[in-house]
Image (cartoon, rainbow, N blue to C red; front, side):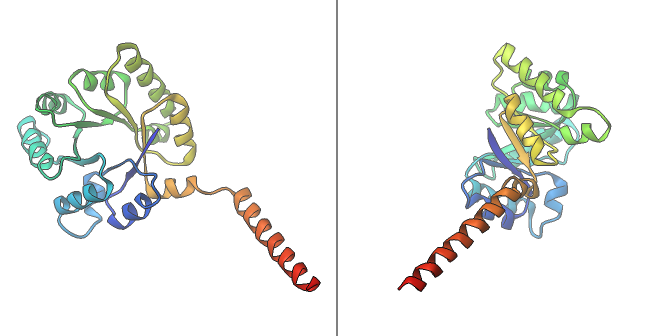
Length: 220
């Protein structure tokens, strides 16, 4: 399963890319608003760092505006993926951009029918928001399971990006269900490295080594 970072922070992206675990990045207007500088220049820099898919979201809500803005964003770098909000306007814009070989990530997916419609018009990715479903007492991972089943039944090439990830358990569940990608906030990726037994084990190894070295010195 591929791991994307859900952030607009160049510092965070550079840090995790250096570890060799990042396959792409997703951004949105809220994330980009937190960063200083021109959003399109930041997008360009992210593409240069990651050298993988980088989702850049349109602000427009009408079909023509989405298409126009999508083309402009796609011109920033070949790695840019156009992020469109699901809806009739988004589906129409996706059909046009996909026909022009511009990859689209259809976001704000909350049902299997929405994912199906996005796949039918050629979306390269769909982004179901599992955390937000969990927030309203709905099992978000059930949605991932349904989309995986549907896409496998009809051999859609659309990849599933598990979004609104809140903790490492979501990542494990997504991987077990066969989702293509998890896009995670940096804090979630950081948490994936942690386990108390790893820390305890390392501490014990180092203490045993220090003791062995001290005992060796005493015998000299």
